[in-house]
Amino acid sequence: MALYNVSVSPHVREQSTTKSIMRDVAIALIPTLAFGVYHFGYRALIVIAVSIVTCVASELLFELISKKPVTVFDYSAVVTGMILAVNLPASAPWWMVVLGGVFAIVVVKMLFGGLGQNFMNPALAARCFLLISFTSRMNDFSDIDGVSSATPLTLLKGGETSDLLTLFLGYHGGCIGEVSAFAVLVGGLYLIIKRVISVRIPLTYIGSTAVFILIINAISGGDTSVTYLLCQVLSGGLLVGAFFMATDYVTSPITPKGQILYGVVLGLLTALFRTLGASAEGVSYAIIIGNLLVPLIEKITVPKPFGCEKTKGGKA
Image 1 (cartoon, rainbow, N blue to C red):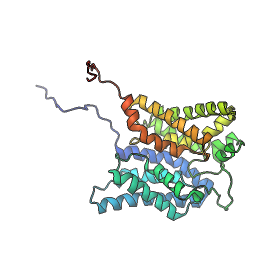
Image 2: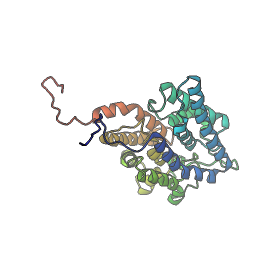
Image 3: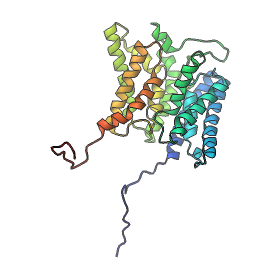
Image 4: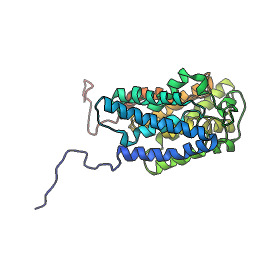
């Protein structure tokens, strides 16, 4: 007689674990961070190292002090440190990097229950905190020789354009991990191939940003050329935000329709910030605002249960 193992659902289980997913994200971030070190020099390497060490140490110390299970070996703190470094200029002083790492892990992540409980992306929340607190230092994009140059987005804001090949390869000013569109796309492709992320959020986010910028500029009489739109896509933090931050499992919708709506919302916010806002960039603020809207997005996009029919009272 055959023996059957009867258990509660789910009966088909995904082989991926938190550790394997975070490890893949960390691997995918290597190309863009490596190019940042190549382009900006040893200062970028220092910022990356300090950011990762601070995030891991903050999480470990918090868990030891609060007597909670140690979770630093799941690589989530490492990924937070890497994403924070992506969003920092190479000229950032070490103490500012430490402050950002502590804020990301302790305030945004651990005080809300740890991984899976944070209501917004910890690294982006830390970046916005640093932008508000130390605006001039966060906008200091001087190179290794101390020479400062305008970022491509700043040039676009002033009515100038940039060379598309330069933007694609990354030989210009900006944050450590946002300069090379090619390196970001390599990492994003790795995540898609490994099925860590789907293309719904990145493609919807990038596409809707371009469409909304086109619409806003058409109404206001701004530049609507293909070259201008490509410059908007390839410059700033749009690509790295679309592939590595907007797709965060904890702070993005889980429903397919919700992911598409989420991408459209992010695109609209980014377009508004970039075209009508005082700053040339808007990705970080767009994503954390989108994070706050995720519960509402999931509520209105959750699929109806199969075989469920509403009664006259409106209840199932």
